[in-house]
Image (tube, rainbow, N blue to C red):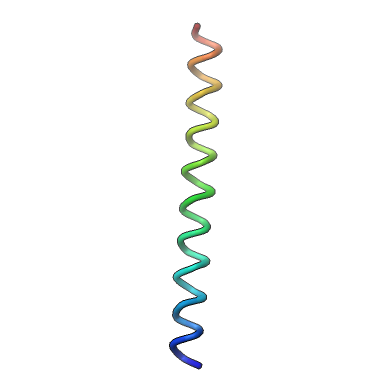
Amino acid sequence: APLRRADDAVLIDTTTLDADAAFGLAMETVRRVGAG
């Protein structure tokens, strides 16, 4: 069970990082389109 919980925590952390990266990419795209 502890390993399962640890894996779940890593999965959640990775998903959050991916969401942050996707959001950052979207914001950068908006800036470039607005500047262009």
